[in-house]
Image (cartoon, rainbow, N blue to C red; front, side, top):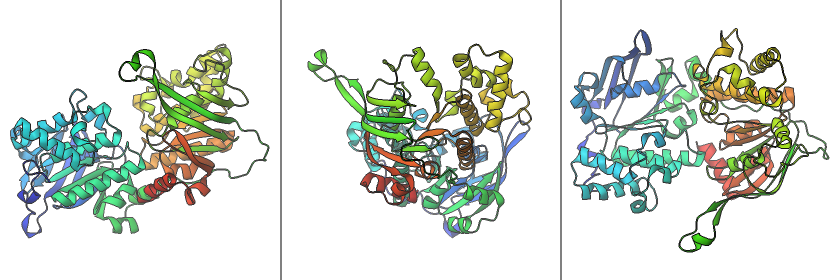
Length: 552
């Protein structure tokens, strides 16, 4: 523990007579005539961990931001009593002392929350200088100690690093270090682990729990992940469409949920619903790789860099096969090489070794769209992780979904093309009856799950045999994730599609895959039938992944 920046938390004593640290009464938030949070009541005591749970749009983040009065152009009513002071009645000057002081916040995406132009040590020092009135030298040393406290290796060196030079887990730890700099009584953690691998997710939760025990601060965790709630929180409050529908001790709510929405959330785990029929031993695979290798050139230090280049090997010796109508799961943490493997299979990266797709190979160079390669690309389509960034905001639904037909069937009449677009949208559960003017709408007019359905329709319209699914559900709420997985399972059964499923989510692999390969540092460390690998993993890394998924 630090002396100047992080003394014991006794400066913020536990309120006497059982009074809560924060008590929220009848909180409502409106934008114009639309009320997005209605009549919310909850409290949190010093040293307590409360989880605020709900899907996207349920109002949980708005509720948290309204406590700090960070919701622009909103009308906020009710009370938010922090040690008896109503935050909603304080002046803006008084609120500046509360923000980052008594209450600190860790945001969901550290890459957008951290300043890309300042080293992380300087960003933490800035908080210490403003909130603790430390000198520049004192704050710099205290920042290093805070970085060390959150478990980032080589803290003195990492203090001079920029956000893009850190891994996802390290960036989130840096955000936590910045939040802890002011010794807050209450930490608001808004989806702090959503973008992280399952093992990093567990590490961040363990870190927050340990820091909470050390400092005595209260933590309000905002999340849609019920597994995290079960592992981390003391109490849980469930929100649906701006209303708090249920709250109580975590064990009690999970054992006997009282509200239909809570029961639906708890039941929204990925379900296995795939054809298990075995294929003949001589069935040819639709995809096969042998000793696949992908390397990137890197500069060498000193004079050697003038005459030669080094290399970073992202995928080394990957051998796999995908059978017709089945799913091959590729699982591993960020940096394991799984997305690079997918890009090489899609013909988007130079590589060595063999790739056979439907008995054909990419014609060199694989990255060039020759007539032979274009014909093969029609058979292998891809669905990306984030549909919002993979769908053009300037194109309508009709243009997005029909784009593949313009490329692969340019002579198709416009009326026939539109009919194919409508049919593809109906296959994924989107129709004109549900969404009037569907074809003329733009991606921003749809929810995350609906945008992912658009992305699947765009891939299916050219009638491929193989779909590469790159983290297709990791950005979605649990109920929407379940719907998208059920859609993919139905399409596979009806169309005989083969899926190459890339994910870090072990439960999605268990629900979807027939076979699985486990990747670490660019190498396949284990492979086999999915239930055999997940139920009885042999490699220590696979055992670690499975154990982390169970704990999370």
